[in-house]
Amino acid sequence: MSSKKIRLTHIITGLNTGGAEMMLFKLTQKMNKNLFKINIISLSSAGHLNKSFEKIGIEVNNCDISFLRPLSGLISLYRYIKKAKPDIVQTWLYHADFLGGIFAFAMGIKKIVWNIRGSYIGFKLNKVHTFLIIHFNGLLSKFIPKFIISNSHECKNIFSDIGYKRDIFKIIPNGFDTQKFSPNQKFRKVLRKEINISENSKLIGYFARFDIQKNHFGFIKIASEIKSKYPNVYFVLAGSGIDNHNIILLNWIDKFNLRSSFRLLGNRKDIHKLNSALDLYLSPSYGEGFPNAIGEAMSCGVPCIATNVGDCKQIINDNNLISEVNNSEDLVNKVLMCLNWNQQEIKKQSFLARQRIKNFFSIEKINQKYEEFYQKLFNNNSSYFEDI
Image (cartoon, rainbow, N blue to C red; front, side, top):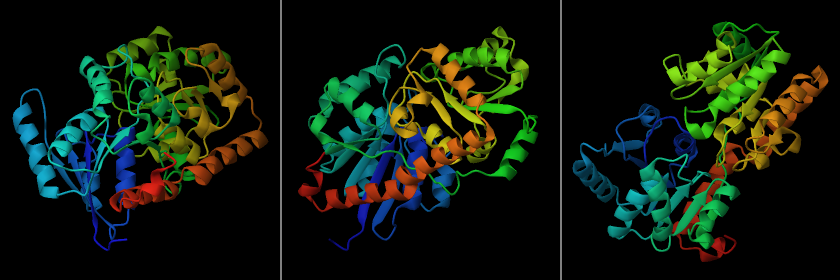
């Protein structure tokens, strides 16, 4: 293998705290800087994670492509790619796959890799321009990307079915920092005190941005059923748009008279601490790829109940904790089942959740898969990709 550092440029839609953005941060933080020279291009203006990347020595350039300044933003994208002279361009999310892929291809870069992570591609839960780009990218997939990395088998199947080139997909799941995300009694006590929840109360969480696809209304509806049977249960939500300024969310909560039972924490940088305060994590989402939030909760020893979307079933690996989409009655029954566990069963389920992540989805294991992928691609090792 060549001793030359591999110049790797990541192009991503933005750098706020979503699942793809956090995975990119964890990946670049752990990658071997003796083997890779890494830089990041964001199509948007500076986001929450810009400073985090700077702290770990990763150069970030923001194109600030917007409706008001599309031309100058696109010129910036061209200049940043040209300056980086990448051996490999890795794009993340639909808009970056589209723009970053086209620009890199037009500039003669041969080793372009897309990263596709969503699982819902319909018109109902996507903006119009996103819906159009998703489907147009299916045509571009025939000649622009050398490979497409997906974090879930579900994602690969969905996108292949609408015309994406199936034989260039490679599955690399998300990875989790099992040292940072671990059970911690101190965090549990501090966070419960912060949100005014007693140690004896049960606390159920859901950490996701405010988006129709995440089904917060469904969570609140389920919470009302649980609360009617277990008065000492409370619910905590966190994520972009999840705060007391969100009138729509507050109206939903008030519809079921649950204001005193909910804690809305907005964007948090200490999700690992929040998870330590939970007894149970509940995800009623309509669509996922490979949800970071579930892996993070499980890494903290928190049992997770989820709808059967994306690779949730593969992550949790327990059919007793998986429900079909829109089956809120089944989700309620599964939550009640967990709330009825005795102390021995609680400890067992906590151990199994954490061990599942440590065995299969630690960031060290996933980082190794990415590094091996990039090295083989750089060195044109075709035999490595025969099983894709």
